[in-house]
Length: 236
Image: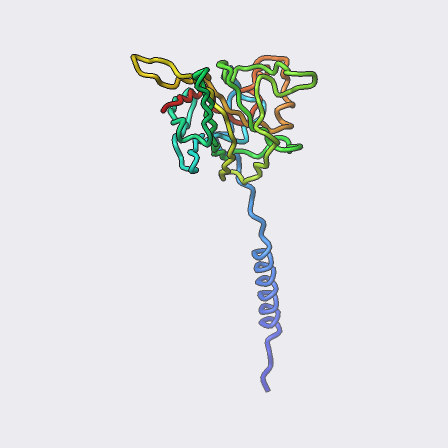
């Protein structure tokens, strides 16, 4: 008759229990949240470290044709692009005044580089200004209770809930007025708007700064991302 060594049996039972626990932990392992990317350590408009990290960078802004084809892109501050009025989503021209308006769909490619310092309420605000001060525009209210300052919002707040390191495209629509002028003997369109800057706000974080004090009295210091002073030339 075979007899089983009690010590060996106990060892095998213990080993089986350890394997079960290890496999169970592996099946239910929760991945770690990635750290903020280096780009999140952003600056206020005066060059000082911002009170909170920036959540995003705007990697590029692309103008689309009426056929939804990429026309031109900008990827940094103070860039110049040219787009044809005849490739715009719509182009309205008035002969008596020799002026027109070209409407384009514009795609903002936004990359998340940090977790939000404060959870959003309604969502993220996407907006722009034609003020040539760019990131240095102020929070001057347009009406009683206004907190958006010298900017215009693109519709309702949007969701930008992608993980750190991932990108999302947001498409907005903009109009660009122009007038026809004689340039060296040739009639050509001339852009009326000298500058366009784009901004992304966390609708809660943006209000957590002391907006009455420098540098947070300037919009560029409280937004999560911006590209400023783009010149958009309207051509034939």
